[in-house]
Image (cartoon, rainbow, N blue to C red):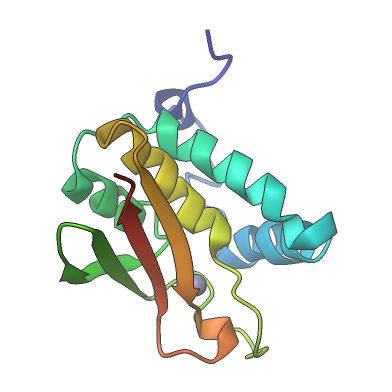
Length: 150
Ligand SMILES: [Zn+2]
């Protein structure tokens, strides 16, 4: 039994400050706290944390997962290529958009792991999500490659 579920996260009762926190707080947790503050740029942590969050969403289709990605304001995902082996997704308005460019750094791995966790429920765990492009790396968009494991 989980102490907290994704459904619990929607139970918000803040009279004055409401249900939003500023993007700079999310970015600070992600980039200053995790990417910069943890060993190996937080790689092990982001994979564990992201997958766990994704799984807790209990989504039942790829469309629903992409909808949640936008609803949670992580970014607006678009499928740019899809075949039987993989799905290629570009994210518009990613949370990292506007940050200074640091070539060689892709910072949206947690968000990819969220995708992976959510999709693992749908595809019986037989998928792998890889971050292939990122605004911070100087790319035009953040992009993920979802590979089906056969
Ligand atoms: Zn990004």
